[in-house]
Structure formats: structure tokens, C-alpha cells
Length: 523
Image (spheres, rainbow, N blue to C red):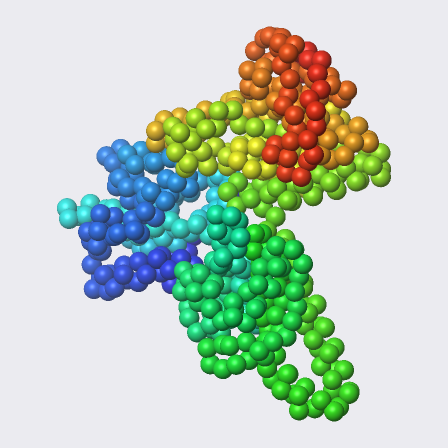
């Protein structure tokens, strides 16, 4: 597990503003050389920052106990450690935590740590400030502020802020009829905030037309909306009101989710030079070449940003668009080189009951753990795991036929059935139902997904927590791990409609010949 400790340079190594601020407070209290009193960092007096705090107190047996565990940490980790002993965490990350605490107690000096997250999900790195304090009776108390460093967000912010252009990403706000009526800023770089004359935070808290009403008056807003709706990029050069003056800007607008991304390059000086030297054809040609080079540079930046948008932000799995493209590419390669390709569709059983009992934080923890388990044992850069939406997932297995795909699905089913998550309201157990189908060499991608969904439906109809294989021509076999119980002959999968999977035409249900196998077929 990646981990680092820093005794020096904490003020410039720390990314989180709250960590830098609390470190400065601790240094000020320590200026006279005396121990820092715990009352200055008591979570009861810290307001919202207490949600990111951990407090340890030593016990009589040499261990340490969690006396405070912030709510935001509970939401991300999926369990509340308050009242638990530090020794309960037995993984390598637990040993790392205990080593940090021991060093701080021995040196009586702060420590900044970085470590890779032990759970699959959107948090890539944790940043922690470990502070030694003393209670009123002189007993040591360790106060920790933990903030996530999200890898994709850090990388995106670095790419955006390194640009000399102003870049904003906007999500459309729609009325009840679905018509765009405004937009909200999803991401803003420093250059865009400077040109708008406000801070980045102020832009993120304002709607687009509230902050820039002239966009609607100039007609630019409607052109941006057309880009989002028609999915056609836009490039233009226009006058643009900035905080200090009118500028000539080159604008590139591309679709971005249910919205658009705008890149604005200040070409005021170049435009003035072009106007002054309009009679010089040679100068105009050089300016035109510079314009093309700039467009190519920004297109490369936009391609990189699009790459960052292929992952589901909650689970880290491929998002719907990326997994669909991955399956399409796998089928194309299979058609070209005549090798097998199979898919496994999976749906968590009774997921609504999990959300109802444990809340959305518990449900999110189950979704993240599910992706971790589905990914376990797959081939890196070959097999694909994607989230289609909600609790529905799909796995693409190139070079694997139906029999071996059934074996993979059975292993996944067993991993889910054996897994559990500690939660403040009790242990969360969960299972999944699986549908398997192999491409027959002729059918469309939508038909292949339809067969896998039909097998998944049959697995659920057979009692859930099962694997079903669609062998083609209506033959579906259900693998019952607990004893063969035949299905009713009248049990039919639902007609495959666009509401079941986006972009697929309805199909009439076919009567499937179903058998229940006591053991999965051998690969």
C-alpha cells in the first residue's frame, strides 16, 4: 500500500485548506513551547470541520480508542468507528495508522500522511494531519483531520489551471417539460474566474444566466444550448465582455454530458494586429496558421478531458457510454479475428431494501464494494466492468466462450454472497443475479445484451442469487447453487423495450426452454 509521512513542510505539502488552517492554529498555540490543549481542537467546538475529524485516546492496555469519528468519514468509509479500538483494524492500513499515532506520541510533533485508499471508489488518496494535544489532566490526545485527495479531480484541476485559456463546463437546467432554461457551472478554471471578475467559488455558486445575462441577449446562450442538444461542436471569434474591457475571443464549444464545455482564448492583440495589417496577405496567412495550430492544441486538451469523463464517479467502474463503446469494439474485433466474446449482466438483489434500511450511504458502499468484487480476478486492460445505472452492471469478456464465462459469473456470484460491509446500523449482506450470453458471430450488440438480460431475468425468477446462461435459440439454463428447483414453464422474460435498455427496439418475448443445472459447466 502506498503511504508517506512528513514531519516538515506540512504548510506547503498539504492540499486541503482546512488542514493548512488547523496546522497554523496548532503552531500558534505551540509558540510558547507548552503542550497544545485539546480543548482548542475539541470537535464539539469545531463546527462543520468536525465531520472530517478523528480523535484517539490511549487506553490502559497500550491500545487507542476512537472517541470521535466524523460524519463525512462515516459516509465515505461506510462504518462508524466511534468507541472501537485501533487494534480492530488489522489490515496494513491499520498498522500504518498505529505507527503514525505512536510516532506522534513519541515526538510530540505533528505529522502529515498520505496513503492510498483501501476501498474501491472515487477516493484515490487520503491526506491526514495528525496533531498531538493534551487534555486538562495532562493525558495525551491525538487529533486527526482526514481529507480525500481525489485523483481524477486533482488531475482535472491541474490540467484546467495550467491552461492559458478560460475553460468552463456547464450542466443544463431544464424546466418540467425538459426545455433548457439556464445552466449551472460544473467546473471553472482560474483564468475564467479572472475574466469574469469574480472568484471560482462565486462562479460555482451562481447560475450561468444570473452571472452572465448578456449571453442570452447576444444569442451566444442559444448557440451553446444547440451544441449540447445537437451534439455538434461550435467554433467562432467574437467580441466578449470581460471584467476590465471588451476583448476579442476565440471560442470553442463542445458537448459535455447534458451540457457543454467552452474554451475561450484571448486573441485581442492578434485581432488588432490583423486589423492593422489587413493589406498584408503574408501576415494574414501567418495569423491563419497560428489560429489553426491553436485550435489543434485546444482539441488535444479537450480529448484529454473527454478521457477523464469515462468513469462512473461513485464506483470507479466504466460509465454507460464507455462500457457500451467497449462492448462494441470487442464485438468488432471478434468479427475480424474470429475469436469468442461473452458478456455477463448483473443486478443486485433487493437493492431497494438495502437503501431503505441502511440509507443511501449504505447503498453507495454496497455499489462500490460490488465493483471491487466484480473486478477481482479479471484480466487488466482486457476485461471490462461497467455500470449501466442504478444497481445494474455489465462485464465484457473478450476471448472467452460461454462455458468459461459461466465459470467467471459463478465465481462473482460466490464472492458477492460471501461479502459483507460493516455499517453503523448493522452488517450489510448482499447478493446478485447474473445473466450470461456469448456472441454468436452474427447478432447485433443490442441483441446480445437482450439475451443476457433475458438470462438475468430468468435467474431472478428462479429465486435470485443465481447464474443463468442463454445458449441461443431460446435455450436458457439456470445454475442453482443450493439445489435444483425447476421453473414454471410459463415464466417468460419481459419484452425487451427501450425502457429496459436505451436505444434498443422492442422485441416480442420468446418461449425459452429452461433447465436447472446442479453444477456450472466446465470451461
